[in-house]
Image 1: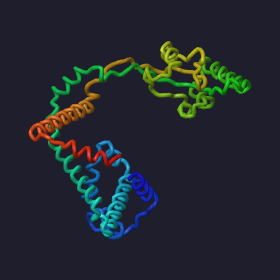
Image 2: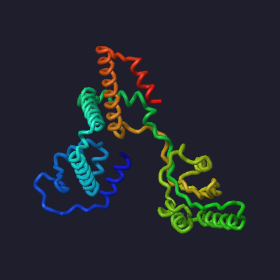
Image 3: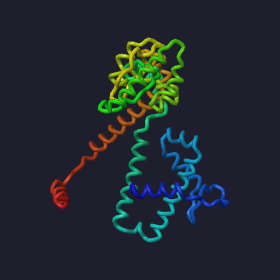
Image 4: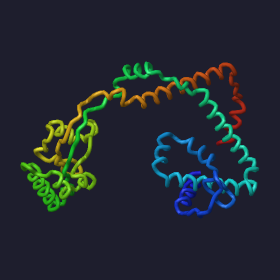
Length: 298
């Protein structure tokens, strides 16, 4: 299946769709196969809200989906034309897939919480009972100038790198020095160098151990008095700003909390329904028949 999907994706990437006038309500055509607007809408309705937002901002991706759906329908039509859907093993798999879609849709409808859930009281209670879930650790806004350390066995290269690092540190610590300009021209960490050394916000616990203590000792605007040596090289670090540890406000996490509460309620409702169903209609299993089947798997 993965190979087929890969081939379909490759074909979609390299195949141009002929431009022809299509009937109203038809978004794509491949030979005799058509993809209607309502079919495409059904595909889009089945994806996550995040994926929908990406599609809304990227027409090319939606066009790619149209091509992929046309290829899928064309392959299905070809398979039916050759009677592939009549093969016993295929028929059994199709029936199982049909049942799975039916069960999934049905149980989702059974478990779906009412639109009124959660109430504002539910949301606030959950927020107040789980402050740790919304705690933001202390964060540092850092800039760096990085010099790669060659193997110490290469004494000449190592000494040259050390000399470069010392020169950059002296320049960076001079009054009125342009740290960003030095990072752009001298730093050997390409990503941060392109941004004038800016490393963005880094959570305290995400700092590599060698950097954590030196950064904690800096005050806003300070540059490390000595370079910090790590396995990769030397870091000349500047502390640009600090965000103290705190709890994110309810307004900021409300949507996330509502989604989590609705998901938990749906899972609880689904489990309760399945338990009720199995209690009402007990399951019987023939150990002898299971053992017979198991013996054929060896």
